[in-house]
Image (cartoon, rainbow, N blue to C red):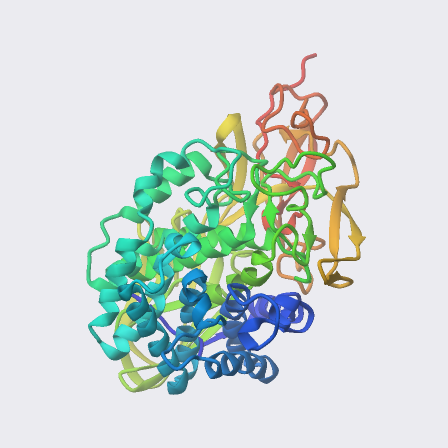
Length: 615
């Protein structure tokens, strides 16, 4: 089992630092100032929502504050932690409700705040908070065992989230009630493998069984049980993932779910919460299994689906994104989404529902916390080649590993290792599954998932790695193709006009910069295209200060496309049909620049390979 070096050891640099800084200055970094459900939450003594939204927000805000070493952010995070812990009831109950309300309170939020407190303890070593966490989880065990509270609703479908704080406590306390609570939750909670058949055919009805965020969270439960109870992970997560992607997968490594599973479709939505929860599941699955395929999946979601659903300044987000997304507007009649209302595709403060407003902020910070891992005091595994620095101690020796890279915009990285005195350990560099191979300091490696360099390190040593890859077309359903280069998916960018909407609804104000936007394509039929020919040329650019800029991407692909007969989805004027009516080019090929998917807010990602036009 691997463990990630915690946030006290990891220092983001380069574009990753810039992305975290943008987040801190945007919507997710300011919800305690602008959004009643966080600013005035019952968790801190206010009158607004006292369930999942403050814990969701803290789950991203706390690691963001620590990674940026920002005293203002840290102070604001501590204010919330102090307020929550100070309101803990005498028997350990932590959630903001009275004794009389406990039986009806959905204890999913108790699992969630437990996860937050465990992370806070890992980052601070605060024994006061650790004691509050222990008392809260022990209280849940006592009340569940006695039948005074029950596992219902969201709690029954998200029972495994409690395993995260329980794992933290068990490594600290090793008390018998901790695994006993884990086993009790497993017995009372939903058995997800038994739901497999319901995931194969989408229905236009909301159910817990097919809720995409439940399922994204669920993937990590076999790993968590394995780590806590000493069980072997028998490949359950892999089996479930293969089935889910067969029937609901997307070109960017996520699942359709707007907000329940929506089938194999390039125009159904994917909820932002499901993207960040998938990422977190992948992070846990690699840590427990050691299988780098989960890191491949993590990268694909992180570098494509996550930035695609956020505005450049991160002051707005979407609830649902579409792989082929030709407009982001409120549907004038019946919603196109299966189980979400008509505004779910807008960029805004809380389009559709506020869960993603609170929860979307965990994506980038937790990715940054997953850059480096170890399995003891003798190795460093470089999981993700993002610009950063690791400061650790191995065998009592201070060790610094600095990664200078523009990955994933460039397929290379330079690691500089500094040791104050001689120290023997292994430095392992991951080779992604999409790579044809890697070159490390001039030596080529193929057919490997990592390159391990074991030596006595002393002074300063540089190690260079280049990943071998070419642009490639990947087959997608309905006879379409997507283009990939490295971990990035590329799409036809559709320049958009952002139409601002400022208003107030249910006491929540939307005003610049946290207003809502509808996005309209500047050219009405620019999306009706397909690939013409097979040429693809990589073009590197300087970019601007936004890593996944929608204006100035750091990398593009040049290829040729042509117009094709492609209708709208039946009954809609702002949604493309899943596939064109034919495959014949209607005009001559034209050189086209493809943007990284995460940079293209309006886009066509899955397109056909066209036949030459008839003469």
